[in-house]
Image (cartoon, rainbow, N blue to C red; front, side):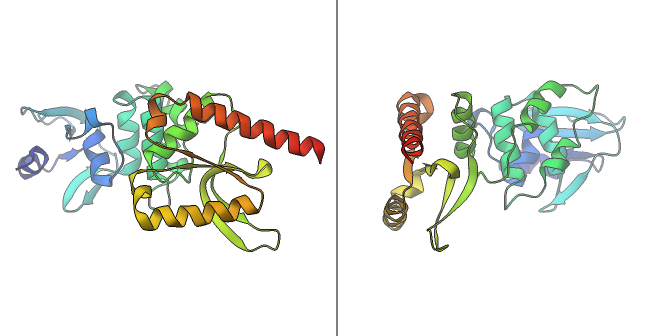
Amino acid sequence: MPLVTAVALVMRRDQYFSHTTALERWGAPLPRAQEGSVHVTTVGAGPLMRRPGVTGHRRRAGDVVVALDTVRVSGPERAWRECAGLLTVQQLVAVGDFLVGHRGPTTVDALAATILPGERFVAVARAAIDLVRVGADSAMETWLRLAVVDAGFPEPELQVEVFDDAGRFLARVDMGWRNMRIALEYDGDHHRERGTFEHDQRRDNSMTVHGWLVLHANRTDIGRPGVLFERLRQAFIARSSVGARA
């Protein structure tokens, strides 16, 4: 029996899953080192849960607690804020991007509202909320966006819809710079599937015909993004040259 399932059976009414355990229940992406961690918060003065593999916390009354699949967990906003002490800024941004995405349960404003002066790890939470955006479909897309900006490129628009000159829809790309007609796609493992690969080819051909440069990133670029950044730099130079000639 998984530890989290066993703990759920013995939690008292004044206790609930919190921190990364709650985020896992909400489906948020977590770094491998945090997967499977069990955090239980006690409301009020009752005894903390003390079991092997469980980290106990205490909170005042008033936090939002939600029944999710019959288990009590921190609300998505509170769970995000709780993890400012456990995750890096980049990891917290990835979680935030997921929670405010089109399948997510909350908004950027609701996450920001959990950041209160005087609480612990406020600096981490504030740094992260400034970078949370709507539109990332995966933690890797979040990483790509942050890495591109850190490398000095303008921040890309997310989920860019591309149309031809007659207004016909051509494609939707992960991120891009509409004014430069540059698109950047993150290709996860599912892009190796035949149907997805063929769809990507048709889409890219259509965009190329209509004047877009389409670049692709994959998992290899995580540790060594230098080549990707050089290709992106070249794309910006090429587009700037076209603009100057026009």
